Length: 492
View: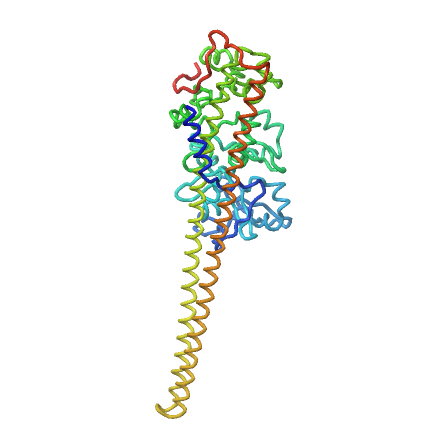
């Protein structure tokens, strides 16, 4: 990428507004009316419907096998309660015992991830990339359901849904970090993530909410967002769109094993270094203090001084790597910002659609109520008029009373409709104000992210070029690093 293209990209970055980056603390959505909470239950062999509590009490093994998405537990009285009951009544207990129950608060009421994904999917993609799941026959199911009932699909399409089974139940990486951290770090070091305020979040959440922190502390967490704003691992990208990786992330070095599973250069060097050096001599690197193999791109960004002291022959390759990584970060940031802006628009449209549907339902209910009152008045009028001769003073009094009642009902109904529409207008105005506030915050957050990226790159280049003053000559025969991950070159 030439200097003109880089300048153009930086202008583009500054021009594209960034979606509001939400912190780790759960944000409480406050828009529109509340859709109904999910109803969990199923039919038995006699075609009798039972709710989730009945199944958990009488057929717990069946429930685990067929409906792992029905989150809940038994209270002290051995009554099974759904996840939203626990989060509403025992939030501390829920957080401590069931971090795998994903959900958030809507108007101070907790709803599970399935409710959010069915009603506000764009909001979920923006605020909760750590809620792993996907749609099956138009219904959203969490990762545990997929691993239990559609395991091969989960393996093929979502390798980033990290987790494992414990006593017959699949739990995500966050649960393992909370209850079995040593086991997790020993057996699954590739489950990238870190805790934030006592809650573990995967790499996708960090790249969405703290991209500067990721670039600074964990540039080896390779992945990017797809067109639907789902974060995907580098291996998924190499398997599904290798040309895209070669264009946008050529420094994601790695290759496929005999089972067509992609692994990073670090994985290969630590498990079969002889094969890796034979098939991928371009994977230049060394071991860090924890005896973990790191490629030259990692060293250039994280410990350039140590690398220059150990490997002065890497100098030119490291400088080129820093420039290339910076360009990658610029492009990825621009893509992510564009996607997030689109998600913000879609989220607003979803809110409007839900509010409009609820508005129409309430309006129809008001009309039905008014029609019922009109019919009641007509019945009363008919009863009273039948007892009086037509044209008599008593009959005229009944007619005048009926007319007054009808006028009063019409005035009341019109006033009710006016209040109803005023409330609706106030809600729309509040939503519009909130949208403006978000857009303003987006611009501020965007400028901060672009500034942080540029400062980080400037500091990296100063630190690198300032070590022993300048760039050493390249080692004979060592060229600049280039991407690995070629399909078909797998382990032999």
